[in-house]
Image (cartoon, rainbow, N blue to C red):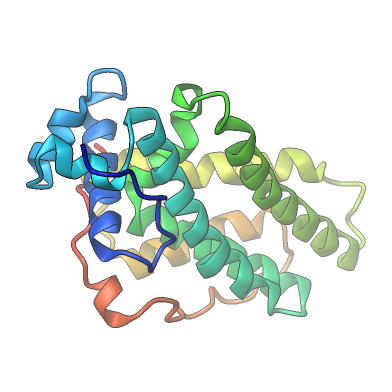
Length: 226
């Protein structure tokens, strides 16, 4: 069996990224327990031995998929939002970037949100810590927005943050089957819907920012989850 390689970061190995996306699609469609390494190897045109070059087992693959999409979250969403000094603009950037990530990587995001129980106990705390860091950043951004508007007593920021996350995560379930809007229009509408519950006069949804190369963005995505 080939020697197992450490899972790459987002841009280290394009082939590994393709495997993560395809594996995420299959797991989202069939369920984690019903998906075998053989299923994934066949889909990505590898032998099982070849697949083990990239990943040492199904639980490790689940962690690698989550690690992949968390890297995108930190690089393409959080880092960009942190550049905004104004709390309203920061929250708008954070939400629009997160909606775009859900649309761009629906299967991987579905796994990040719903398959945590399948993780090996050694991986779970690492994933939970990174997910909590994002939720805390969103909550803290909402706190700043409410304080700026003297509305701190009106909304519980924890309730607001998790309510917004639930709304955005739901996009994966209905976007492909029930929405005839393009990605940019959908991002604008979902972002504005969330912001209008938090900001009296919300800023316009930020224009999409290029955060990965054109080559990377042109790579085929897995089919969206129906």
